[in-house]
Length: 121
Image (cartoon, rainbow, N blue to C red):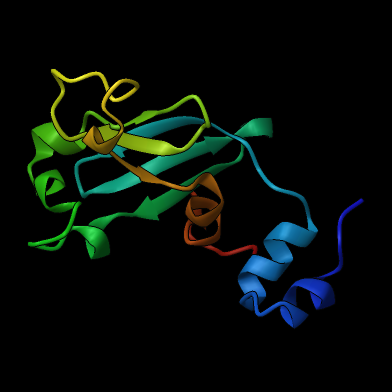
């Protein structure tokens, strides 16, 4: 049974996160890179959302290599349905765990906007 928005707020969640979790977590089923360094995310039921990755693409961070389009476009969903990139595409991230940069599907949903622009969280 889902807990209420008030429950999550009492635990220190942001309002957007409280609404998200009280409505039940969403399972991401597809990710597509866009040339403007955003991602089009598809969730079960066909809901599409846009996630802007640009704020994460800072020099000196784990996301720095994704400033290169050829690296950014290698995005995929891992076995947990999280957004991922392999730092070195020649290394199996299932064997070498620190070769992967990932984004949690929950935060992707919370921090994205529906395709079309209006927010519903």
